[in-house]
Structure formats: structure tokens, C-alpha cells
Length: 453
Ligand SMILES: Cc1ncc(COP(=O)(O)O)c(C=O)c1O
Image 1 (cartoon, helix red, strand yellow):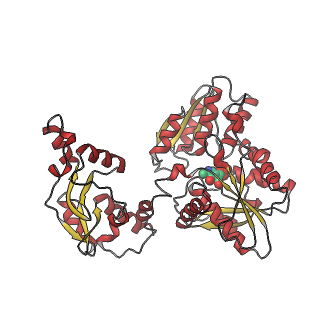
Image 2 (cartoon, rainbow, N blue to C red):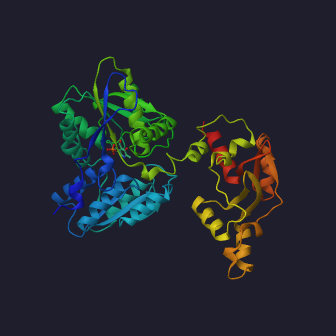
Image 3 (cartoon, rainbow, N blue to C red):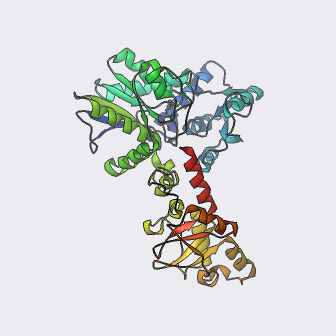
């Protein structure tokens, strides 16, 4: 009888047909089909097996790793099936969803600071190593330097690609997180298909593509794509294998992932957007037909609130020119259906559920396309404290504030400040129509993106 661990690998390969591929054919290997949803199940299984084989991990041992990403999930899957304890050290900026996912898989999660770098005792990698050293029977996985990581891809991912492509692969387009995928597939191809080119897809801001192109490691920037791109060259990344590198800006990666879903029906994560964008650029640059493969590294289901959420793109400042006007901070727009709102006759129960689902502390009350009130946490709490048993059945129009202070979308942005000083939320009107609301957090975010460039 097969266990879930036997379902790792042998992932399907499909052809991309709805994008301009120049003279080339382009194929996608769906690593999202692995049981924990990503390519990392392969190295997770292999790194645990290697540690068992050489005695570094014994029965009832503890697995320690520094990640809240896909490697953590893959390791939690393997640890759970094999009866090991697993401790994941996670920087505190990690998305809550990822931490909940790791815990739900049975991992113990230790949060640490994300504002310190390599060499600091609280840096997540250093802390994981210390915890492993202090814990009896513990093994520090260390995917960045563990040779079983690239070996997993040399033994499985590389041969599968070669077989599924009937031995004819001109180029493989890959990203580098730890380097396991690149180094493993690259080594397999060097032995079995030496003409195959390894192409690096890297997020702009990462040091890897510039290193391939210039031999220098520049100062790292920041990027929103997850799982690939680095601020150092990982020991497991053999960049000598790389023939050509592309640096892909975040907006292009995100847009390509969205296009992949619309055009081909494949729900993939942000890094797949980077890989596909680079693969498409490579294909279009060719003057002779080539057979090119890239990967769907994980599922887009984990990134619905980022890659597939227009408000996120607006909050990153990708969608429009900023002009120093109040409209620049209205990220969720009523006219685009993005604003969280209620109708005057909706109950306080409905209002509460919308506020919680939208993660907001106030909502506009809208009748047709007119804003008629605003309700916030203190209005809700007041009603709950004073009201009868049936307080949550009251329509929101009985609780909302109706004396509204509005501001024009075209007003200079600094005019928001006096409103915020008076603890008000700005109700932004665009030529008499309700555009959306602006909060302090929106203004703070505006300054964050303005200062990023
Ligand atoms: C989400 C994600 N994680 C990890 C990787 C690759 O990681 P590594 O270099 O650690 O093999 C990719 C690869 O493209 C990825 O998209």
C-alpha cells in the first residue's frame, strides 16, 4: 500500500500553448502536484533519508530547519509520516497563513527577529543551528549546504524531465532559493544531455542574476516573489552551470502568474511567474526552434491574497502613477468592487463578519452608490455593551455615524493629516462619487512605497 511519501515526484508535464513563445515549444512541469504542494517535497524526503542512512538522525530524533516556506512544509510532511519531532525557526515577518500551515502539519514553530542578519544569534539560520546543537538527538537540515538537496533533483527531477521530453531538452529555466534544483538538474543534464542550457530566472533585487552576468555580488535589494532570489550565493548553488540569467521585476512575475491561470488554467505561485516570464523572454529571443522546460514550483492557492489580489498590487504601487493626491492612498476602490462595505439594512452580525473577513476596523455603509454612514469598532462595541440580547440583529443604520467628513480625491495628500490627528477616517470623494476610504495605515504604506524607490 502506498503512503503519501510515495506520491512525491513523477509529476506531470504539460505544454504551454496560449502565450507567444517565438519559434520554441515550452513545457511546464507541475511540481505543485507533490503531496505538500511544492517542489520541496523531493529534497525534504531525500535530506531526511540521507540523515537516517548515515546515523545523524535516529529513532525519535528531532528535525530542525530555518524556514516557514515550502521546505518547512515538506519536512513537516516527512517528519509526521516517520514519527520525528520537527522544529522550524521562522522570521517574524512571515505571513501568518504560512505559520499556521506549518503548525497544522505538526511542526513546532519558533519565531525570531527578521531585522537581524547572518552572524547575529537571533538570525533564523543561526538560531536554528544553535537549537539543533542544544537539543539531544536533533539534526539541523540546512538545505543551503546539505548535499542531499541537489542530489534529490539529480536523482529524480532531472531524469523525469529528460524522460518526459523524450530526451530532447534544449533549455531548462529555473530559480534558485537554496540552489538544490539548479545544481541537481544541472548536474544531471551535464552528464546526460550536455547541450542542454540551464537558464536562471531571478527576481530583480536578488544578487544571483547580477553575479552570473558580471561575476560580482552587488548589494541586495528587496523583492516580493517568494522562494527564489538570495542576498548571498548559497553553497548548494553551482552558478557555473548557468548559461544565461534574467532578472524579472515583481510586477512582471505577478502578472505572468495571473496570465498563466487565465490562459492555461494553471494556478501557480509567484516564483512560477518569474520562471515563466524568463522562459518566455528566452523563447522569444531564439531564432531556431527549441524545446524548453520550466517548473510550476508551488500552487497559487498560497498566494491568493498577494498575486491574485489587485489591492496588493495597488499597495505595492505597481498599478498607477503617484501624484501626491489623496486618491493615491485609496488602495481598495469602491468603483472597482474592492472596498469592504455594508448596506444600511445589514445587521451588526453581518457587519462584524465582513470586518473580520476583510481585516478592517471600519466599514462604509453604502446605499446604491452613495455613502450614507460609517461604522467602526467602537460603534460596534458600544452597541454590543448597551444593546439587548438581540444587539447583533440590529440594522447597521441604527448604529452608524452619519455626520461624515469627506475629502476630495484631488486634495494634496498632506490634507489627510489633520483628519487623522482628530482620529477620523478619510472618506474620499471623486467628483461627488464615493471612491473609498483612507486610513493611517494607507498613508504609512504610501510613504513606505515612496521611500522604496
Ligand atoms: C517557491 C519555490 N521554492 C524553492 C524553489 C527552488 O528552490 P531551491 O533553489 O532551493 O531548490 C523554487 C524554484 O524555482 C520555488 O519556486
